Length: 155
Image (cartoon, rainbow, N blue to C red; front, side, top):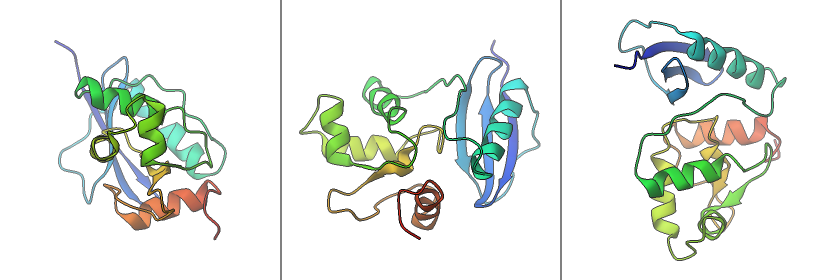
């Protein structure tokens, strides 16, 4: 049985829950409060350090192994998120085209909204085709902050 680790990172945008195995990060989401006592592991510690560097403006790319849990389609979308460069934004429509499913814009949006590894798999970099910020599990104000932090939106 795989051992799971849990830790929390207090970011400028609020508390982030991090879950991992010894081999990979499996979950990273904003939470209002810690739901249970954490049991840190090597991967949660690495994730916390890389998040600290990201928020301090010292890191643009994460180099953590990730283990996505979802459908094949969701995993396809989430892996594609990893290719969006720091400071860049794309539309849901463009994301659908990039995965070879140009007619699946709504399904891509739904998968993006179910991304279990926020920030590292940068679902915040996906916006509406009209340029508006739409949908973000952590709240649109966090999406806007993250995009401003990366220089993708003007202050």
